[in-house]
Length: 358
Image: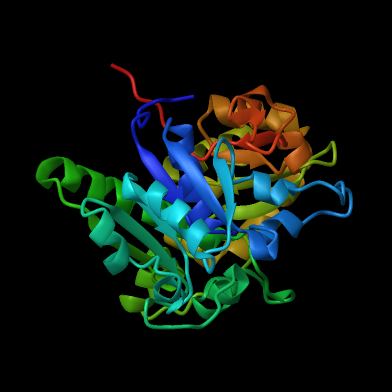
């Protein structure tokens, strides 16, 4: 475990995914993270989000474990003055507080920035909201994916809108809040002053639209549901079956890579065809290009073809299940083992995967 923040104390008043993911980042970095859970509701709601295969008597779920590794858990009822005082003592000498209260609840419980700043002037208060600080609208990830264009773009014309198979907006918001806290910590080192850091899931989602946003803002292209295909590049996102029944996906990003692709598949005649000689033409004619590539790729076994692609620097990958992903030793290197303060075994994926060397 990295101990960069071994002298940092974080109090986590958040639950579900985004806020706890930020807390786990700091726990991985060596910080002391105290997670406060509501004892009147049996704690973080994700404790009950169990798969049918999970132990119904367990106090945790695999979902809960994904973002709560290595934290000290304290159950409290903030409506109880004695229990609230205990939490305020934690906050009094904390460096960071992470919260995701609905509008007004932070004030109701006396856990808002203005109140906590009085007992800890140098506190960094990091708050996550759904649709902004002034909205009391409940925000679950699928709602954000719907409201910010992600579901509209995802899927195919046949499937209709599809949610991405994880709470991506929460994860992105966690990264945004993490960055805000890190900037606030730098500011605190320079000035000794705390800060109020605020991130909304809605703003995060819109900001994360990236090139799909500029495709509209600059080119008035309204992105449609085209599956895994890339609107600007071809062949990119096309999926092909191989001789051994595996599926591979191509991500050919430039003319040199396309040349290498044609060389490997022995279809160099395409390089003299105006329909495919440039990327813009390949995008226009991607359906015909797909029909040409399909039988050629099917002649290969997946391992041989991927090996050839890697050798010639043609970006491509085998589509793998989660089970297959964690059969790879490189993926297993990114996991963390341990026990929580309530003795549940954890086996989770790291949230911080950068490496700092001297």
